[in-house]
Amino acid sequence: MTLQIDRMDGALSVWAGDVEILRYVYEQKADPFEGPKPYLHPVRTLAGDVVTGYRPHDHRWHKGIQMTASHVSGENFWGGGSYVRDEGYVDLPNVGSMRHEEFTELWTGDDRVEVAERLGWHTQAGERWVDEIRSMTVADAGDVSWALDFRTRLTNVCGQPLDFGSPTTNGRPMAGYTGLFWRGPRAFTGGEVIAADDQGGPEMMGRPARWLAYVGRHDEVDRCSTLLFIDGPDNKAAPTHWFVRNEPFAAVNPSLAFHQEYVLGPGHTLDLRYRIVVAAAAWDRERLDWYVRTHPW
Image 1 (spheres, rainbow, N blue to C red):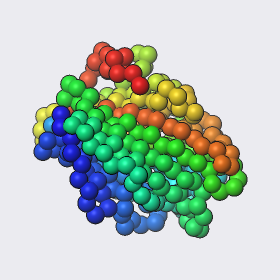
Image 2 (image 1 turned 180 degrees about the vertical axis):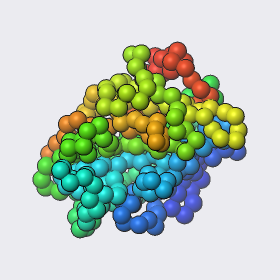
Image 3 (image 1 turned 90 degrees about the vertical axis):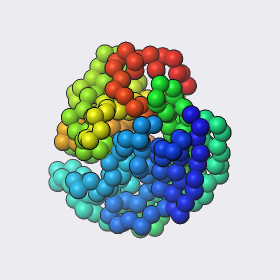
Image 4 (image 1 turned 135 degrees about the vertical axis):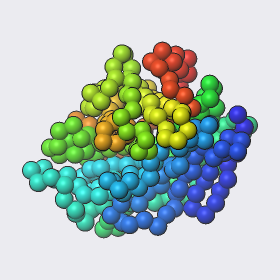
């Protein structure tokens, strides 16, 4: 698989032959209520099928694959309303943004692309709270699939501890979403969830697992695709508890604070790594186990 990278106004595209397998939009004009931040959409299989949803009517701030944070010491880097204990979701003046600053690396080999970037997290009031160094590697994964390795280093620069939480840590049961988040296309509703150690199904909500996969069926083309999400072995927030839904929509999030807050001290850094494998086929448990076993980090 030969990869190429194109840079356009506010976005990067990675191509595998004549298929644009991902577009990384790093600058955008978005409603501040949606929590402006870089996102990956469209993301495609090598067969050209789109496996991400963008700005759905139920959650306009869901945009493909994004690094998010739903609750950070009272600030919302997710978008939309904030869950308030004993009140429910409330629209507050606390929706921040993640702003691209510069690319420090853009490298392309025959079968590999490397991207490194600096970003700043700013509250709605304009305070800079987090310095982020983000890197993404796109590579051939074999068997009509490709892999995205996503790494982020979050450094607290606000001078006080930052409490990373979620709606669940604020009182809403089984809604612990925060961190790297994938929203699937409408057609993936009702898809199959498979997880490590013979686990699976929508009951994976809030449970720990080293990896989790989502198999969806496309409209129009009579094909299936699989997204395999692998938790980094050295993640400081491990073990990952998964936010996953196949109804009423498809979504996967290896949450960094599902049941418990993660406190990041002043000047301290949180280092997270994830791998997302995008396959142009319906992988079963045996195939998923084989991939994870034979492709260690």
